[in-house]
Image (cartoon, rainbow, N blue to C red; front, side):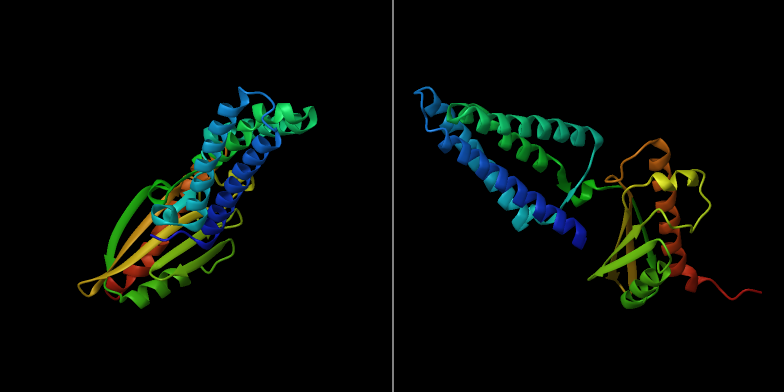
Length: 250
């Protein structure tokens, strides 16, 4: 399961941001001048921590190993934590530079803390979706890919094919179903992602649909509408890939 182009860009940007914050922390440590003897071990520890954060940021941005499958999972609790640390971190850095070199070493930890919370927002692809459904179709792989991508050429939807993976993005403008919480559409602030993986097995095509996008945030009605829209999209994909099995109507 390959991340979408947008997910890759977000991952690379977050990794570069973490690296930049780690470099800022090191700059603050060396900029302090180690004016007091007790600052030396503190500066060493902060520098070591910054080196670890820098390495983790590089690993995320480069997409090495498991990092290539990591995506941003914007859980509300983690976002609140990141917001708090970012505000305190900015205040600490401003104070450090304003108060002079002696204050820099005591506030150099905060860029690292913000970078650490940025890295905590990422999880592997398997953690992004809450539901997995699977079925098989007699369509060849190319035909199944075309059927799924063609079914979602509608206003409010967009599709991206990456090899045997099909990504569907649902926007608030989509009106492809009758949903109980449809009035919450105007409050949807981000696209809803669905992932289809197609594999050719024994002359058939196995389709794995992953929905229940955990990156969607909002109030209860928004989350329920997201689930309803996703369920409709998966059902559409199921119908367009299995309708050929039905016999002619009497």
